[in-house]
Length: 437
Ligand SMILES: *[C@@H]1O[C@H](CO)[C@@H](O)[C@H](O)[C@H]1NC(C)=O
Ligand SMILES: [Zn+2]
Image 1 (cartoon, rainbow, N blue to C red):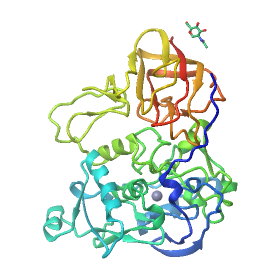
Image 2: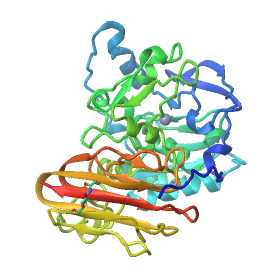
Image 3: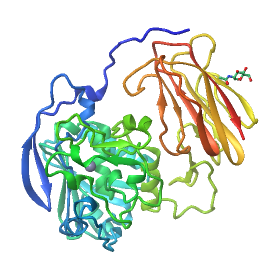
Image 4: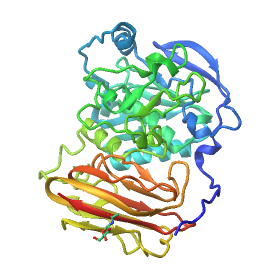
């Protein structure tokens, strides 16, 4: 049974964000250029991304700036020079970031919430600066959160001590956008700066605004996030129209077009963002035993396995159960997965997790017999997520009623499928056959 699309509006944080700011862009350590960017009124603001289309949000140290200059953008002159450098010295000693707010900073609550999530899931700690903290960490660097016209941060800790500022403008007055800026502070570059990004996203240079090509520069392997798989769902990734010459043409697309809507998400930290930070700061160094976590899980700061969303158990070999009776670990060679209540309408606020589990790497094929899920722009309301890039990464999300996906083939041992519904608008759901071969 097909149901008509509903056009309801929900209060989504992004839609409240407007980009009417005079934005200061910091390049090579000093303000270089100012540009005013206005969003078109009829355009969904989330497309611009929280940083705004013409804003760079990285303040570079002189060393980092030299490195960027040395690594010429490959297509401009056909070569990419590699420079050995280690950014390990830009980590915060003991994982402690001494910080302060500028006087009368207006939304400390948002910043503290962003900090809290980083602290909850990593061993990184933000401590209000004091002489005793400075004695404990052995340096005088202080991170200062200041209100700015735009949003920008340094990458990691400045070597030379003193105050380094993270500027937060009205357009990053959200927990997710602040988590992104804090990501820079603890040492993350943008995800699409990785040297292997061309395997995952396609940059269309001709659509990039003039003078902004360096935003799409790749960094060399010494820049941290290379040991982990590329994460299109990272809070450190740009969105498809960022730095576009006309704010419309895509500067970047995922090679798998189904993943493009996920790019530039600022809902919050991805599983891989947190996992990488844990690794970077060696958060499990004091754990007594070497637990082996499965399915992309890792030993976290509490010395237990931290599992990708939807998985649980001591070694992440089970699926998490929501309140609705749904979800399972499926080990048979073939079977069927249906939405809760199928063939009736699915239930409200469902969280269902399935893991199709083979005993070794196999070919898992999904064939759709039915798909009818409330439609929304990025499947933000109700969605069927199929973790085609492995349990620890975002996968394509399906929603809507008009298109039945072609059969989906996954090579691997564990295919995780998640169904989430919100508190209204229930549809007939889905029925999927699977086979393991
Ligand atoms: C799904 O499996 C059932 C039972 O094996 C079969 O009757 C049906 O044709 C299959 N549907 C598709 C779309 O392959
Ligand atoms: Zn950034």
